[in-house]
Length: 99
Image (cartoon, rainbow, N blue to C red; front, side, top):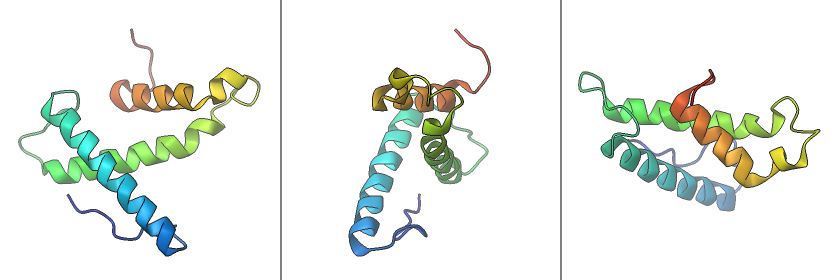
């Protein structure tokens, strides 16, 4: 899986280094989740491309989680743990109702 050496939004060397570390950790996490069967591994598809896409989706969810309707009214919904749980739950189970 290709790591992005300097994301488009990294405006400094320090930001680029931080994003490289975040990318590295995220790729390790997603690879482990896939190897443990938490994320599907499509034998017919390019696994690296699937994890790249999943990484992009997780970053998009992280970016949008604080803007979820109603979070500005509920301080508990703004807590980092609550936002992280929302992102992981959405990433793994989708946006529809589930148990």
